Image (cartoon, rainbow, N blue to C red; front, side, top):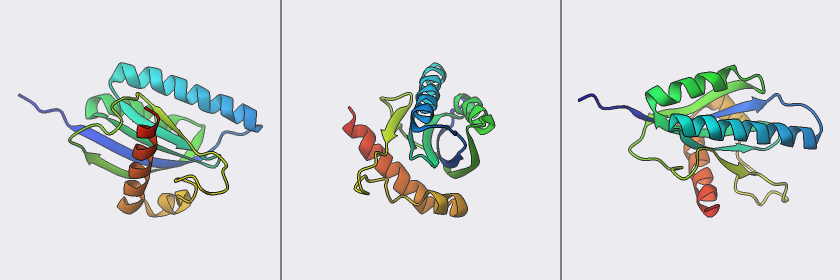
Length: 146
């Protein structure tokens, strides 16, 4: 019996969506709607955050299910500078309740847990500590949404 490899990918990317705040919000809702539909069909779970300049996303699933989803993400022109912070085998889902949770980063004078996340440093360094911090914070915030 062949064991399927279960993966978790954490990545950041630079926003390419332009327009007014309302126009950008419509695009983000479109991204989330498409992700939720496609991820559910592919048995992929995860979470996304967006702060106006950067996207960060966690994707979880079996390698054969996750690969086409991530290939499509890489081709999406609404972001650039895609940097995988970590791609690891996982023993369980951290976002099992969501085909794509959305962890909002509201403008709240810097008190939001992701307000000071160093997206640019993560893109440059692509190191495990940034991925772990992002994964931990997004997981905590997503659990509060249930």
